[in-house]
Image (cartoon, rainbow, N blue to C red; front, side):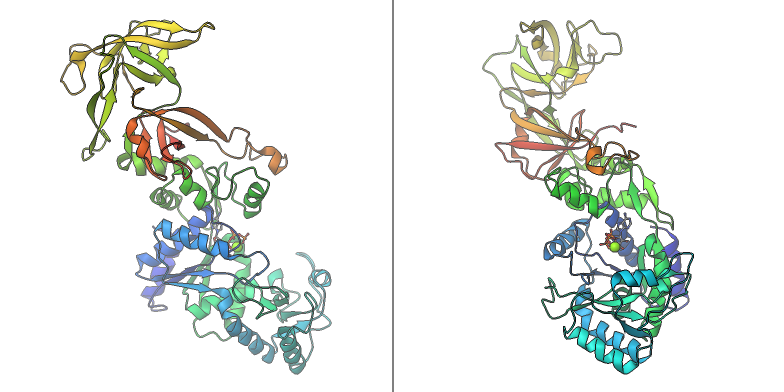
Length: 540
Ligand code: ATP
Ligand code: MG
């Protein structure tokens, strides 16, 4: 991983500014992580790893209103899945006492005051991008009065919103974040970790730099929208007289085509029942991607391949699929599955015989193991591999009077096409040539291509799920829920070869000539379900 932050870290080590790199991933436990977060996770962990440093996981649980312990567990699980073990797991709220002491220090230094303006009044006083703000009438309270009021805020004497603690910086600053930002607010609530111990909660801009400083974070990495908060970050660290001085560096956010990455919209999808949950196979959450079958390796390689710079970037979702194919190409066993079954009867094969043929589990991997597949007089092929009209030369599959190879088995030739009353093809009568058994070295005739099949006498029923993006058109001005793709999930019922009867949730396969599939979490041996992760070839 090479990027501008790595260069800075290297310089800081070379100059002796730091002798160790310490980073942190600081999610707010108010949602499931999505693939955008993976950029932050991978960047923090991989950069620290490059320099034998450390990365903490810190739950930024200082905003109690939206947070929940359910998300804490999910986030830990996601990190583990991505293959990262944090040096420490910390909770921002565990620093509340130390944070409070720093607030007292600011008050004593005349750098913070208790303000009685309501939220509305405060935003009026704040001014705009073009107009300076106005000083709060409470700005000149004495240190003693501020200390007294702040303590009484902590003791719960005032209702929600009645007072705030604000930094005293500059109401005319061109950077609005420096116009006496709020440091603490009053919320009487049961915090998921601290219970009712606190009714005043520090704001992100105050808590975050302090947490970084308490932990000795050297490089505090965050996404670009915090760019104009950096001055405030530095103000807090400096004026709170922190022993260790962290620095904030911003990187561009990752956006992916056709992919919704806003917490608000992801929540809306779940709450409206448009998806089955945060782990729905169409969701860009790490739980969703994992269930669908994306591997941690593929996600990591994808994220690293998108690079890192100081601009937000949008990359094609096709790049993630390509990373998945690269990862599974040698790892995933090949299997045969039929999604549009067409019955084939081999008229010259003994009716009560089943034979087992040995085939490679992955013809692209010379170290692959083998398995046995069965062959009998009743098979299924994919109806898309048969053409009724006389085909042209490009057709490399089955047709009447044409001979193809069945993968791992024999050459078969179609002699008769059986139709139902409506004219639909329902069965093919074929003959096989015993001399053409796979691996026999037979090379007298060249078949018209190789197709896959399953043996109807041993195969298992299976359901196949196919996915498309949840959003129809990113540029549409329709409301979010009206712009959803009605075909984002589609289902086919067919057959898989016998060995897949034992497939377990999260097992991944390449279904020959079709794509990469993953056994779904709801799959059982009596009710097999396979998610198509991605087709074999890019659709671009
Ligand atoms: P919100 O602003 O609603 O809290 P968030 O996506 O910033 O949402 P956090 O839990 O604060 O959620 O995110 C943790 C870290 O992940 C932050 O440092 C954030 O900048 C980073 N992050 C989130 N989404 C992306 C993205 N799409 N690309 C890069 N980094 C991201
Ligand atoms: Mg955030």
